Image (cartoon, rainbow, N blue to C red; front, side, top):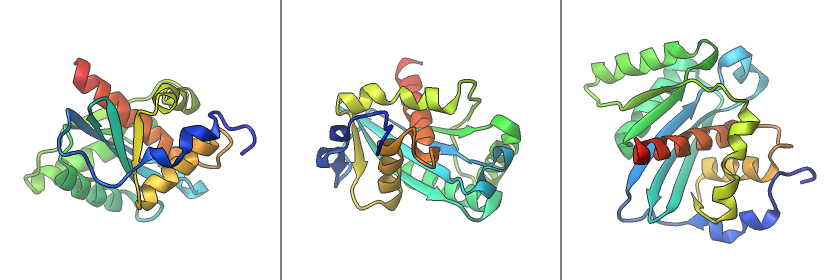
Length: 186
C-alpha cells in the first residue's frame, strides 16, 4: 500500500508459525479496548494480543472484536486469561476506561481466577508507540499464528500502517511487547 511504514518483505511467509514453542521465557496479553472517545462507534476494534517470547522470537496471536461492549470484553478477557495464563495482562485505561480494569478484577475475583492485571496509561501518540515495533519486524523477531483471523488482521494492519484504516491490533501488539520487556527487565 502506498505510504506504508515498512517494506513488504517484512511480511513474507516466514512471519507465520503453526505451533507454539514448547517452552517460553515470558508471556503477556494486552487489551486495547477502543472505547475512548467513541472509537468503537466509529468502527474501531477492541484488540486482544497475546505474545510469548521464546529464544529471542516473539510469537503472537490476536482476537479482534467490535460487538458486545464491556461485558463481552470482560468475558473474552477472562476466557483468554484462563486459556493462555499470561504472566502479565495489560489493559489500556486512557480516556475513562479505568472502569474496565475494575470490572475485570471484580469478575476475576468472583470466578476465583488469578488475573495479573497491569493498568496501562499511554501518554505517547498511538503511531509513535506502533513505530517501536519496527526493529522487531526488521530483525524478523515477530511470528504470527497461521490460520488465526485475528493474527491475519493484525498483520494486515501492520503491513498497511500508517495508511491503514485501523491500528487497534498493532497498538495491542505494542502494549503486549512492552509488557514482555517489563517482565524481563523488571
